[in-house]
Length: 225
Image 1 (cartoon, rainbow, N blue to C red):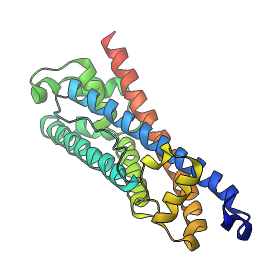
Image 2: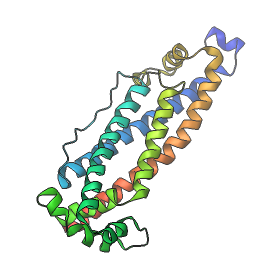
Image 3: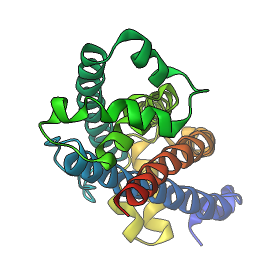
């Protein structure tokens, strides 16, 4: 037991808590990298995008890794915007509005996009149309991506941002010291609360993001059969 533990008996529990929360945050980050790369792969294959995959920097800080995902999402949104503008240009206004109508059947939306997607992409499949409908013609998807970007930016700007990812490979005491090096001792409780708050938001946003990507990949698989 560290000498300070006699003065602050709650420290051992806090060490465990910080380590556990940091592990959860890293798991969420890792999942977001994987899901984003999966989405990039779908866009590159079916919409002809030239997006580069991203990799988690184990030697970087939480903020640096959050920024990497944010930058990738911004590039994804740019590509989706290009397809959206092309659809708006090629489709009649009434048909384009149908793509934005949440009450319109998805099969009908895919049929609408199928009319012009080959003109936009040069050549296209029903899978490409399905991807366009799921990602371009959905305000829900746009909102989910924007929400995750917002949460990641908040995490990066918080007390947690300057903490290194690699500290998880260390023992609990070393993790604790690394975090104390990033925040003042008087801020430790604030850091724990920050972990808890951001994890709730991050997990919620990540779950919706991952669910959306799973829906896209499942739709693509169905169209290819």
